[in-house]
Length: 180
Image 1 (cartoon, helix red, strand yellow):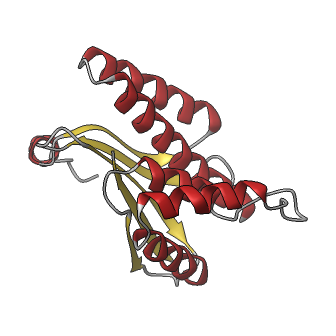
Image 2: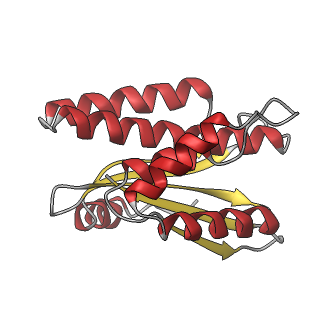
């Protein structure tokens, strides 16, 4: 077994100002536990209450999206792998990032949706969110229509950014970042 360079990992986390990072199988209870740790850390850091709530909400939405996608594909809690990181930027904003393996077609659709959202101003995002709320749910009972992404975009102080990186085996790694 290869030795993990913990010092190098620590230095990388310090350089990127990472407060919290997780990589591995994600379950409902783990999402909750990490969320509680995140909230506790931000409260101890004396972060403004509105920033704490927004960072927490965005983290929860991103983590749940990964879990829902994995379950839809038939993955178990042990194979629903997520990579999540929350960092504090020098200007006081928080970068909330999440990523997972996706089918290329799903990833391309998601990146296109996020790129379209990135073009909207705050008022347009608000109007789109309200319009989406009034739309009927899909016949499968799962909205999947991007209401959560719209909410993340509304909470973000900068446009969302997404990346799709091809991986061996025909899948892609999708990553999303929101700045709160």
